Length: 296
Image (tube, rainbow, N blue to C red; front, side, top):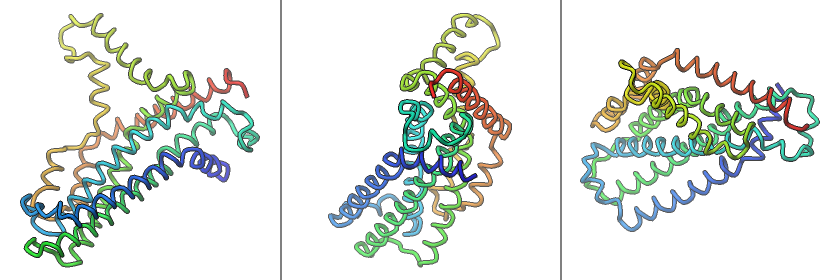
């Protein structure tokens, strides 16, 4: 366990720019933009949006921030895995890590674990801080525009609790759901290094094209073929977005427990569990290639 923690710490040291410094810079810029918007009266038209209360406005803003940070996390993890599985093979004398008596599988598994635990934790914390910025901004807007409907402090606390609960649950499900795609990019990183970025899209596209050319005339198949049809379905997290939008944007307070329960009820657990198994297999294949063909 100590060696695994040490390896995850190494990943943090080598990639903190994307998961610590860049989010900190974005958060600082967000703070400046939000507070400047209040100072110069850019948000006074918020009343025209029909926000039912100050707590509701904070709640919607906090959730929107969560969506934006989730997108940033997925993009950052894609580029991380596109390089991580081959990064330490470029310099075998890197610090003392190469002298650790660990298998290649454990080395690569630590990279996957860092990508789905430590790095998302940094982004989640950045989201919490951005929620604090939204809260302060909402309070300043309510002070500068007394005609807007306000809320008691407990309403803000309840809204924050519901949003954080839902955001944490959604983050865990998202990471588990997309884990096989991260492992796929990592495998390509071990095989082709930075060429993994275009190949992650090119290889599935070529398989889909070949299937369409060979079996297009066969009746009963999906419109875009089995390969592309499955990938298109698998790339979408099984969340009822219309139902979620209704829960977020109606006048009632957002119920994080109910929203998360609906997401869990609609989750394809077979696909999620199978994807985790596939991710482990891909990491094992990458580790075997690394053990046999990458110079130690």
